[in-house]
Amino acid sequence: MARTRLIIFSDLDGTLLNHENYGWQQAMPALKRVEEAGIPLILNSSKTASEIRVVRQQLGNTDPFIVENSAAVVVPAGTFGNESEQIVHFGASRTEVLKVLEAQRASGARFRGFADMSDEELAQFTGLDLESAARARQRLGTEPLLWEGSEEERVSFEAALGAENLRLVKGGRFYHAMGIFDKADGARFLQNKYREQYQELYGDERVTAIALGDSPNDQQMLEEADIPVVIRGVNSSEVQLPSEKHAMRSLKPGPEGWNECVLNLLFEYGY
Image (cartoon, rainbow, N blue to C red; front, side, top):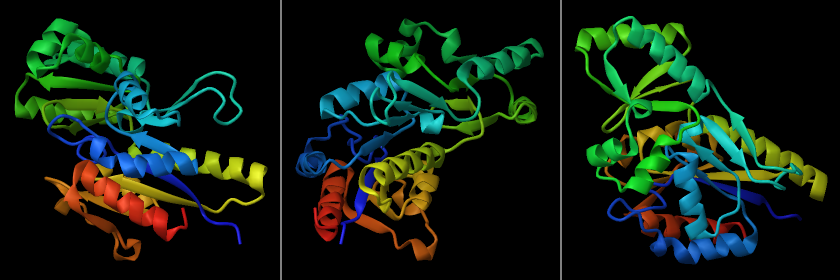
């Protein structure tokens, strides 16, 4: 009997990367096994494509990746027979988002977005180094902003964005103006692509999707997966999945928990 083909979707911050220094070394044994087994490891994060490329380089990862909470999927050349790298958008592009924001500003909305800041200014505000600030500003479908108006004005601003099919999501430090999408959209798209590919190559399409995340932001991606894995973290207790999902929860946080859970699953599926 053909063994189940696995595909892994993973959040980065607090999941595969620890919160202290963004290290992933504690997950090395599992990462090595995943690579040896030829299992696609899809990074799915709120980070930009430029930021994720750095992490992929460190990990030696060559699989597709999902950026800015599913604003877009980046498919490297040759993955699904595509000759060059492909970028697939979900929801509005950043250009469209900025156009709506400019119209709102003209109507009196008070905010300051990444597009309004220089690399130096963003670095100063966030504590990032200049290169990292530059990478954070290279966006495909979302615009982080600092709200400078009153709470009442913000509510009107949010409603105005909604009328344009955009939403305002509160992050840790910034609000994010973005289209209507979540981390599950990119995952769903790639699952279908891999199913088609495996059908063509092996005549079977049994793909079991594993997803790992540590916070409510990962909820939809976890719900979309066959095997959701909640990595222990500051907000992991807020992730509540439907009971039929039988979520796996790590005992250890970050990459340590990631390593443990992935090794257990690989063993369970005969890898």
